[in-house]
Image (cartoon, rainbow, N blue to C red; front, side):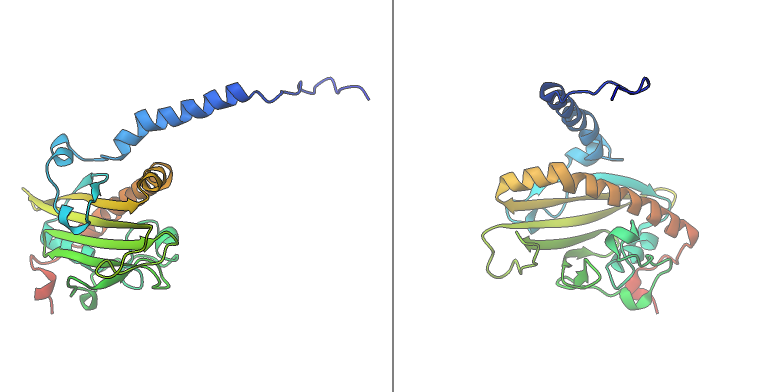
Length: 239
């Protein structure tokens, strides 16, 4: 059977060209996109200056530093942060990805305002994984710690450690700005064994995933705090 006159000629597989294309994409991401992603919204000073929480993860290495200016005071923003968690207010990000499709809260819930170091906030709807409140300074700083073995099972960092693990803190630093605004700087520290696995997973998955979720959270926190300003009181003063 003859070839159809409109048929395109078959293209043979060319491994060198394919490899060059892959290398070009990876290099473009590593050199062009990734550096911006890891410091999204943050100033040079915010990236370079010391960030609290370094003592919370043994041998932890600082990760991405992202920041946003919220048009509300720390007194207004803080209640939204302390009520985070699955089976609570959600994470104000992409709810289908991190909250089982349940919409994140659009109001302050007094029943979720009282948290303390050591409390666990569900990371997934089943409650089989969680963040532990590792540090807490009302209106100023919140650190959430997650410790998992290689199979994704949580472990207690105060007990015996698995041979292979990831241990990290996700931190929120609130700095008051003139005009009843807040500079919200999000960063953290992480350690893992084996370290090579951490580097690969960060590059391929965790860093872009964190950027996707964190930038969405910034946007939604801005919308929620602007929609309804609360009195200048911290949550422990709420009725």
